[in-house]
Length: 164
Image (cartoon, rainbow, N blue to C red):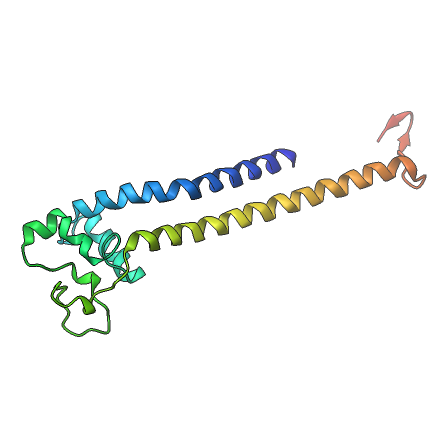
């Protein structure tokens, strides 16, 4: 029981450390993935970016203008962002930067970090709950052991000179 408590405490510390590490790691990873985007939706970076932009209702890293610095934007030369940046209520959205009102205004990096922190907080709370239950169990065991020496109702069972 004690080993599980130590392990869950270590888990909490690891996740607390991860919360601070996540922002830096997401920042470098998201730039890399945006640079690898090719718009075909057949490779993992393209699918991931399109999925995140649709699910989190975001566009670009900080906002939709971040797409201007990507290799895909420079090669396509159509002055637009991926269609996954389009708001669902807008009909016939092409992702054109000439109509920024059709696009999600918020960038994805902050939303991804926020979502990861939310998930990690659930894990931390679960680990803390588990550790608290273990501490309560150890406290109950200590109370029983302390009372055993003071209360005559707690006697050792002796059978034939050996302890049962």
